[in-house]
Image (cartoon, rainbow, N blue to C red; front, top):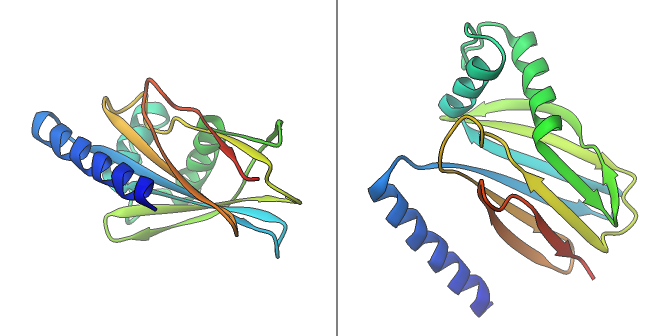
Length: 167
């Protein structure tokens, strides 16, 4: 518990220091292992304006979000981009999360993904490099939760891969 308090305090301090030196870009990814559903449920939260900038830079210079100018293209591009930028290795085997959908909540866009057929989580390697090529200073917080363990990671452009040991 003390490690979590220290880690959180350090994270807040880093955010404060960075906020005073340049713009602040962050996303969160929550991975919840649900043994009752044999699944990893994944929720990703990103600021809508950051996501729109990425879509317009990488795919199409005319897309607008919330309200969407082209909902079908937004979903297609978002799903493809997430599959390209998120890498998961479960128990030393690569797995591809299935895109379930997305919704807007305030100034954020929330993506829902899932990996089915998960019997156990011995190890989970996570790489979340979304928005790294678009926003300098982008940081991605990854939180992993199992019934017995919780862990958080801060992934940056220089460090975008972490290993979670579930057992």
